[in-house]
Length: 306
Length: 306
Image (cartoon, rainbow over all chains, first blue to last red; front, side, top):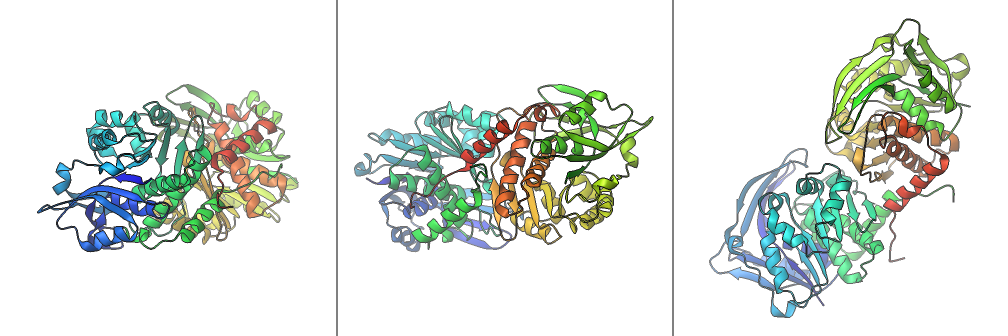
């Protein structure tokens, strides 16, 4: 049975100190699906675009065996566009413009044949849309949810409703603090788990990620990248790698969730090495596994008392 | 042969959102020596205090088998005092006052019998004093150096001289960026290694630490502490645990330096759980090793393709 992924699809204009791209393929559904596609199939993709969404973008997704039966193309409509600029310190970015276009009236419709999918990745979109997706599903068994500071600030109530229904929430450290108003991340994590999610992943950018389970904690390192070309989509690539790996392995033990976190980190590290989705387009299972092993080497130590 | 530790000795007045202490035992030599004392002996302590330094403080150090033959007590002088206040977010602190007192004219004199010590920990003091210590040593083989933003800002030239002579530099992430003016930590690390240190440790507080060697990187997790009572001395405790463990094991391989980083992180985690040096006063080898194993469990994952 497929992995259902719902999220945004966009055309991004991104400027970093190194380069600039205009109208490049972007959006949370796009990045997550591409990342997940290296682990599992089929990926059942639900999103919305306008008539201006080019065939070359469709091709990129289809070449990764992503099933686009859930991609709504609005006649006469324009695709969601976002423009951002990263500073010399790539941790800081300004949004230059946001044109919602067809995304403004997005009402995600899950094709009937996909409503029985057991694995579901709710990419970063409005919580009210995430909830509408949940309501269409027959009996989802494992739901991974991504979100962002915008929804915590503007639609907290709707977000809290979604959180009651998900198995894994993925957010970053500043979002965890924003959601709980608690500066200590460990305490913040416990507070968020009480809101519903059985598992919580806090992404910390250049500092790695932490997975919280039922009284279990796993700390994943960040890949030591000297050159980050474009941080856009790193969080989505993480969510896609994480969920794709779990969907394939069908093992929801904490030990396997740890591996999934490393695969998520692996996909995020590939993502930021190139502009837009480029870093996720030409990978292989072997290349991904090699980097997984690098993560292992990076954090491994032993006890000399053994 | 002993481990020589040189640094500051002070009386700290510290306020956190949880409590306040006045004139508590503090200083870089104090924290590092206490932390190192659980791993090795003898600890040869060099520092300066005034007549107001109480016997109870001497007792704490002596009870940990720290050799105080290098502690200069200035008749009629007053001990270095520092006052600081931590905010609700414990990552932010204000220095309320600094009274150098006898520390202003500190001219570290290494007792002749200790000048042949091979292992040396230069605690966080002015680089010019660190250099004066180095010049008194006959043939030091392994030198660990700690420093801080103040010396990077005010005595950069002297600090660079010291760096040419040390094996390991321990600093935090903001200091690494300050020293190199490079926002990418991995690039900053390579730049610092070119200044002299064979190994570099970048401490990242709640995000753990990274050890850089010759084309090798090790990422250590942070211990997931829900309650941090007093962050004072955490960096010193790290340096003491790291150096004390290495001094005892006499193994300078990268594999063993990794373990030393975890022991340093372990001592820092104990340090911040209580006010002042309290968290370092009543530990045991067993308790320390148990936490080492917790660090191992926190970051361990395996490859399901094996």
